[in-house]
Image (cartoon, rainbow, N blue to C red; front, side, top):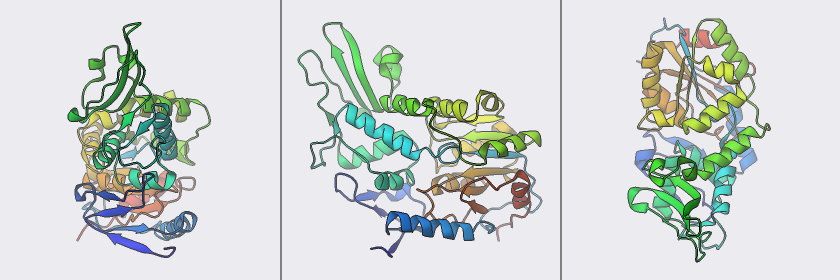
Length: 358
């Protein structure tokens, strides 16, 4: 298997998840463009991905309908994977939530809580954007989860799968209050649970704790490039598919409150109906920024983000991570391992020289 590479178009078969059931993604979630996916050993496949990405770092795409006279008027950053390498932090937070609430799936042969290993999660997050869509897909595919953490005489548990909602909550009959609430994902307002502090998404709160620990730093070159952008009078924005509260926390802790408040536009997954790769978030950003799509440049780290940007008619550069290095970024106008050696003038020149689609 070490040298094997599969080409997938309509359906993507991923490596076996922790419960040893093959993952089959719906064609609705996958681009019609064939995606190259390496099934080799982790370290060697990532090295190959990085090497091929570097070789493509200055290649110009013919996929976008933009004119050669485009001038950079707005630089838009994704957050997770671009401003910070966050995906493994999210995975840790998910697994902490599964463990804390002893969440199990019917298809799991093990009596242990659900646990997503890094290889499986890399593939999951690279194909489905946003936490709620990930959960929705996984539990629809492998069965609604159960939990034994509330199995005591004084407490009860509720699960609402019919509303595409999984809410574990317990009621303490002694104090007549809700406690230990886990919202895996919900199509209803948390206010329907009563006091909003009782209806917290445990996974999101755990992720916030990790971010606030002071051990997470922005990726190389991000802060400098943001400073150059603002100094040049070019509009600066952040568009993330993640939950708004978690993105705000990340930005305030990693780029600083002053830079965050100085953004010309900030959008999160809560602000649009559809998640990436749907282009809605970038289409909304263009309207708020008051600029043309052809004069915007998006910085993304994954195929999902790239598809969202190009779907909105924007040029996109990729700064890949260890979990996205093997993806096919043929529609990006440039590909970098990070932004440490990328200057604003480099991006301006790239956008000016984008070749119109034929």
